[in-house]
Image (cartoon, rainbow, N blue to C red):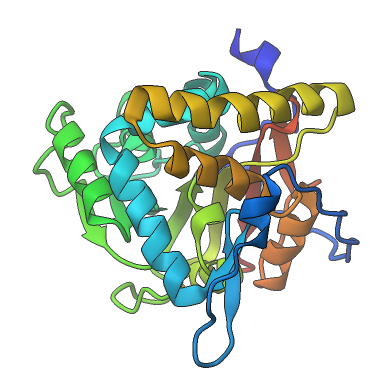
Length: 310
């Protein structure tokens, strides 16, 4: 069933990604708003240096965004899977499985990988990568560090890890950290950097990509799974109607938290298009394989990859 939901993009493994990609500039798409005029009119004060950013459809200072995003994910931490079920119509589990399979994390050559999963507090991707390394490749030494800025998400991940073989082992650790600056991680020390359904919430996405480049070793891979832009007009209209009409309402009914779910659907709309995000990865110094991205389920989500040149 999974293959019916995923558009093929060249399912090469990590080891087949060592190819250069041409760099080119793309125009920005016209932005289209779907929120009410009252929310669009809200403006928050900027920081002293005037740096502002988006929080959904609001314009806020960068410092305010970090606090607001923190509050959202503290609110949804215990119901994170339910949240993603609403956001993806339940397909996010298949996307995550495919994402991990496409990366083939782990080693067959006796040299374990050092993997960093950013914004991965609940452990969804980390557990899958360790399972793949252990059961598919017979690699019982590859390690995953889960980094997240939100302590509530990390607490949820630690709790879930108790149901896995990796709890309290050297193969899995959880650390609190900001993806835009991770001074505790050495340069050129990471084999694979993953971020799934997290980068759209970062205050400075380009800074996070640049930091990923710093800490990856030459030949290392940056891999991102994120909600994106639907590439079929009719399907897009249906998906937008569902997202903006139903998801906040369900958030109110199920979690008594309409505002958090409203932000989450708006954050998807604000996220760069596939081509724009590809250009950001290239700007960070990465080479991109082939087209540079793989649309899933008509573009509802997308996998982006970049390779640090050797």
